[in-house]
Image: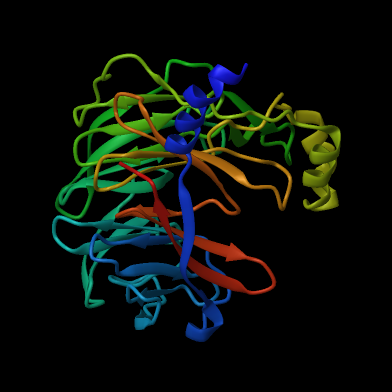
Length: 342
């Protein structure tokens, strides 16, 4: 076996990345105690949602406070329940998905309200492809039994106009609430959820049920066969199901047990990001707290550029850096440098 060592050793070193912390700040320094959404511009400005106060907080590249946007309410330029945020690099604005007001609002980096657009349906994970076009994942909601769909929309005069939609051809299992106050079968959540990454040249859709990613051009057409990134997949255990049930109100347990469709395994792909170099960052899922999440970086041909593990799932990848919101004793924001990429 000795002659094989020189052959395999360089390949192992080549595909292993170096992940080093640049800085980490407790967000109580900027009076943010709960947040699950952030975005990073090409120039390093960080925008995150303050869930307690429905504020938007802008930070400099070093994590220091730039400004806070406070606009609670239901009127024009006001926010009721912001849930997601994304940057549009083409015109240096950012957009906020306001679930409470069912609209998408755009803001300048100076914190000035620009315009807003009503949402015709329940959308998640907004990402801009151009300054006037944005992609969403449309999830099933209520009695809507259709599969989740990727939708690309044009920002028209005060409303969003549909350009195209893409529905994966792979089977997806949904979990549902059975009989809920006589309402019939109500969708609870899909397993696995779709993951969406948007670059300047293509769109990536991860099916989650396995380690495959389908690339689309900006008109919604398939770009060849799906890419496989071969991330590990973990089985769902009885203890994990019970732990999830224990977090829900006891009044819902009977209905949930009657209607719950149990998946066999956790999603292979938990998060999907595309950076400015059009590299695809694919993050796996480990169900046990404290265990690292595997990730791989590939190009659009599916060639592996590097792989490693991270303790938390990042929310942004910009210029070889990953950004994390770490929910531990205190909420913190961390920026790490990933070395070893081509």
